[in-house]
Length: 255
Image 1 (cartoon, rainbow, N blue to C red):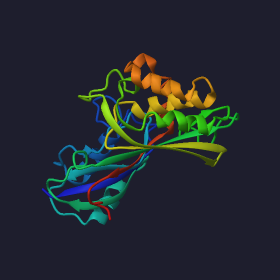
Image 2: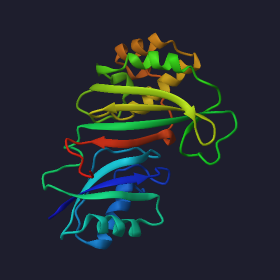
Image 3: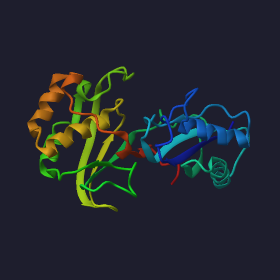
Image 4: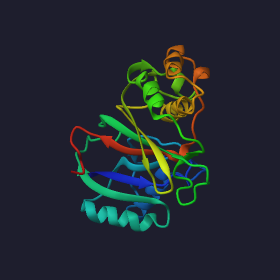
């Protein structure tokens, strides 16, 4: 069965997350339904990461095994036709080797978190950003984030229902930038690692927001990390500002 990599973009609001569920709409379920409109016997697909309910994607990657050969462009066009009107789009497709795996072949994952800082309610960007009413101290947040870069036990910053075998991860980058957004000033958090724990990004951003607001000192982030205790974490921020923005592979299948 020929295998294809799919690059996928979606708005997470209507879905209970990426992963297929019996009684809830999911991104995986929407894609598999579209695939089975093309070939009824298509097996279950696999993705680079399982995003939670309400989380978006700009560059999720999945693979599917088809019963016959498809021109990649025709496959993506056919899937997009059958995905309408759901907010899911296949932005690229590529033929890959039979042993290529969207999850296990990945060498890195990138997340973007968008935070809007203005007092008036968001309108056009509602559901796409986390909004806070007051400005945040970028320098303090960067100082707090510096304590999290590298190889650490991230027990404090993972969900109690996380199924990862180990809380030890290497966080390669947290870049925090500020600039004009569509509806006002935005702060962007860009995180990069080989893999992430469940709720790790939202736990980190929620904690750093407390630093930016002045409720925590930057050094408190290090204290929380070393505590290895979920109770030491700051608030977990809401999902609507989070985007899976890209996945790295030894060779880009979409190049």
